[in-house]
Length: 316
Image (cartoon, rainbow, N blue to C red; front, side):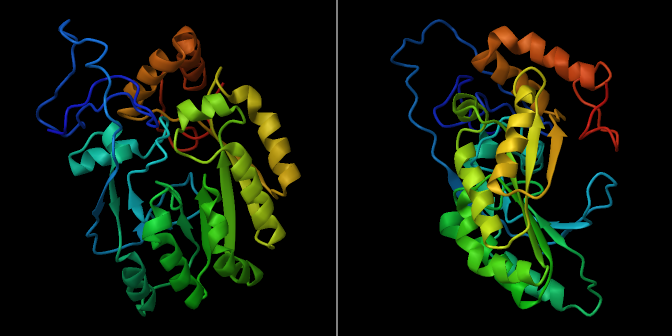
């Protein structure tokens, strides 16, 4: 089993609990036996643990009709941004870890990704198509400042004149303008910044370690001024929580220089249903039923519909 952690808000973290993943044989739960005092509840900050991912390949293939790419690279497993709604959280269960706090504090880095990529691109059977980055976890999450795996991957792609698309929440992408700008000039690079809310208080709770919306808009401006095709993704849109901000987000992104826009409806597959409901109970208890009923209105009465064509857009 994973390390047991109390089900309560933790500073700088999105999830409040660390329930076992769906593949574990045993399940642990925290209960209050009445012996805890206010002093006992003062937990030390949770520290991020980073381990090496020993994957033998780096390009992931997909045949989903919902996405405009057939291959992607994810330099990291888990994400320190801590976005409570992240649809990648359930993937941590494959590692025997929790999609809750473990997803934010137990990170795995593919330190050999650039080397593996170079080998895969050099194969005679390889046929180039744009590689998407940021489709699962953010390639510019905080540990990228030290690990620099995303930058190393971009260096390989640039050397091979291979097209790439990037989705990120981080202004750290501006660090790599020296690579992305020449690639964009050759029509080899596009970047999309994901903006969830312009409300800083809501953002601190929804995505506690992600850069502010102001920094993301500044990144759009910086990328656009460098000649890099740049767009905005308003995601996720959550009924009765941030959906009223859609027009404001699009207007701000347009004014910053975004050339296109898209949105994704909140997705609640597998363990995320419970994690998001717990987040609502913790941070917006008075709106919990209103938000969840709004989600059901877009999902034919359910909290999630995994059907192609509807899972990202919803209905109703």
